[in-house]
Image (cartoon, rainbow, N blue to C red; front, side):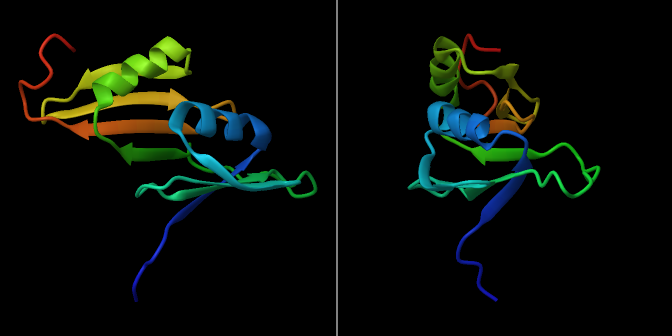
Length: 128
């Protein structure tokens, strides 16, 4: 088997809200937008996203909190850009003891997005 692409599917109450978050804050572009389904993509290695409207006829399933994590470069600068733009940051930029930098955002439907970057310990002086 050879995996040639990845897509993450989120079932949400408000696809337009998530579409706005991912296009405005994280640079995704709309590939397809039809009633009840939006397909978003980027030109880099990020997985495609499908935003599917909740089916009101079916009972909701209890699922774990969805989290999508993107490994990025230039996270300190991206954090500053997101903060200046008023993005919904729900976890400030912080560094773990093993050298990973992480910031969390949460979209209007509760999808948690982690942006991470590996920085050798001691990198980016003055940022905690």
